[in-house]
Length: 254
Image 1 (tube, one colour):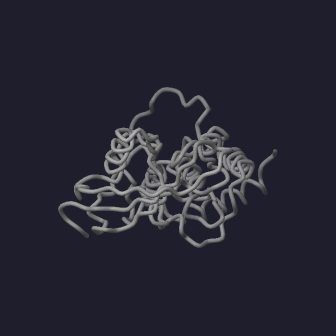
Image 2 (cartoon, helix red, strand yellow; image 1 turned 120 degrees about the horizontal axis):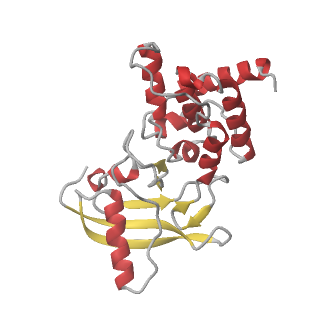
Image 3 (tube, helix red, strand yellow; image 1 turned 135 degrees about the vertical axis):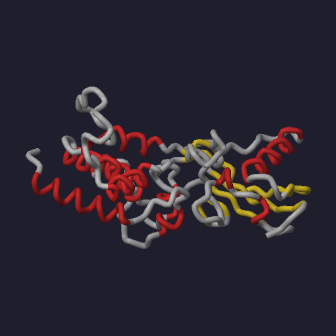
């Protein structure tokens, strides 16, 4: 780790659109404060580019608090950079060395086409959720707090799965560009709780079908998705998804 100021060489992927060719471009940046986040460093670079009359680097961001999942990018070949369970916006420049070359790329997946530079279209995730990641039945008024007992273990597992922020790091890190970790988290958060039971079978069948339709690859159990996930979603959810899918396939009336 470094403290103080950094001089960096940035190799950043530049691409003007989905159907346009892209290439790496190299930029020099000096006096980078080590207390900056990675996105703040990119803001400084873009300010420099604008003052030089050049096109700024496009990248996704929103809350910059590690919550929304917007800020995904590959940093030196790692999704979100070198820190575990950390989003790009929460990665700080003190994790890099003075004089270091940093390679920055967008998520690399067929199902996440590049919009521009580091920004990609992750609407495939939205369509997977739209296929079944919701409760559509009439659940009535809010029941008394303890009228529907939920085992603490199940509640904790569901809560942990619901922590998925949909950033896409699991897809970008996987050699097959699989979306199994994301989809399994969205299935798990409902499958373990009472209000998710009426649509349990249809949900997993529809979400897996949509995932396949979007062109995501198959899971081959390398666990790179778990290693890259900033929310700490585990591959136990993938095992649960496989069980849910098998059970639904064998017992569903549809």
